[in-house]
Length: 230
Image (tube, rainbow, N blue to C red; front, top):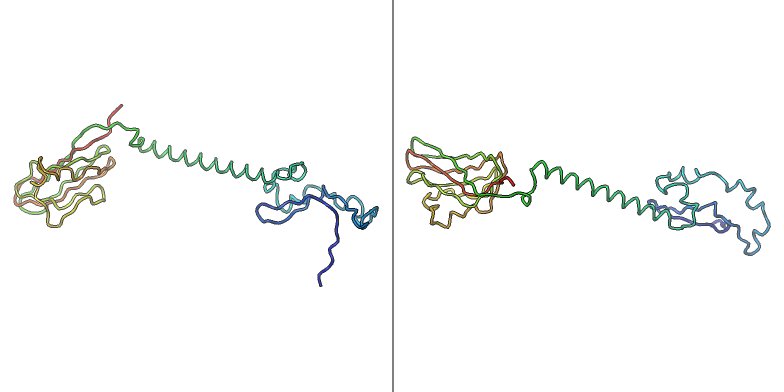
């Protein structure tokens, strides 16, 4: 059988924003006079010390950080705690956004700025592998600057040379296990634009693999763009 609750009066009631627990503001408690139950009976509450206490009544349970300062329950604004909680969340969000922006700017500075901040000019990079007999050949080009490719040519390669694969760093951008004759990349061939749009950072390698039909050179030249001074 449920126990009968004893009414104490009227007071402001708050809900804890994290736990949902209801909290009664004892400082605002006023005795009720309905049904004559409390009229003139001071003994129902004892002396004034019953509800006096100090601010630790709430501080010990929830801590000052949960509700802000001691004025959370003492001012006339019933939504003060909620407003302060929203302000704290907005401040934390602004702090996180500022930190992300700082990190982005740091990464951009270490990379030397984004592509939009750079001016680009035409350039060519290339390499050659001289072989003494027919067989595999490979050209490795170590970039001294950021590079955006437009096309590739094998002018100067020995007759019968073939291309089997092209790597930008560890990324395969073209591959054919049977190989394609270097003549396909002649100046009047549409294959010259095979690499257009491919890019690679300074310090990494462009590797062109192929084979030769006999002794001679396997040469690869890439036309593209590099960053230039303002």
